[in-house]
Length: 451
Image (tube, rainbow, N blue to C red):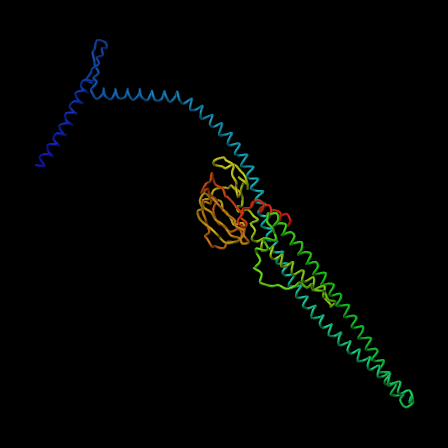
């Protein structure tokens, strides 16, 4: 039963297509009946026969040629207008290209200048490290010489005491000989031989005493000269250390930071101590002045070491090899809504995926997405100093990782609330932002001082 219904439906569809075909053929026969064109030449009649298929092909060809002719005519009419518009666009593009070339040339010059500054800054940092190592070596050498001098001073003091004791003994012997001489005057003839012996001993004792006094005077002179030489050397080292301290303090002040506050934050917590102040008086013992100078030198060297430690933590270089400063620190027009806003960092522009480096050693405090900052890396340098690198394309470090100076930490990008590829660079000191360009200018001052 079901098969018969299906066959019926199939037959109806076949009949429908057949009817449509018959109707189409009838219409074509009505529109394109077979035609003949009769030609008469010199009394002879001939004809050209046009079949239905030939007429359909000729008609379709005529329609195609007419459509193509209309299409090309319209395109030809519109081509002049399009050509004029394109030429105008090309002229505008050429002007914009020339302007862009001049800007690119200016930016290249700026990049070269900044690159030179960075190279000089790096060289100065290496020079400071070498200078500190030289100071440490000089201190060790001076301490060794001082120990040798102290040992010689002890030996000289012992020799002096022995000579003084021997001289006192000789003087006692001389007094005894004089007493004996007075006792023997009544019996001169019987004691002449003994007296001559005593006088010879006395002369020998006087000669030995004078010789010992000369030796003692020579030892005291040598000790004084040696002490003067050591004092001059310590004073020169003191002056050099003082100059180095002033230079490093100047760098920290140029960065906008307080030197004493930084030193206090870097020092360990002081243990409980106290008592009244009793000033230490300088005694008259040999090398007392040298000891005082060495105490002063030790204090200055300790301060110089603390300042050097701080300088290694300060971000005194820019985090990119080459960049252009798009937006400085402070008040500015917001790049998106054009309203006045506060900018707590600087925007450094460069090519997309340019390397971003750590401006100082430290430890990664945060690495990841942070709201409108996009991909962010924050590095803690100690003493309350933190640097922030925002809008990165890619982060190459992780939280808790130790970072050395100029380690590669990410790639320049445009993540978060940004209008294009750039680096938002911030410096935070004890919870408050600071102008990063002050730190970079302080680094340039170090380079100038080294020259």
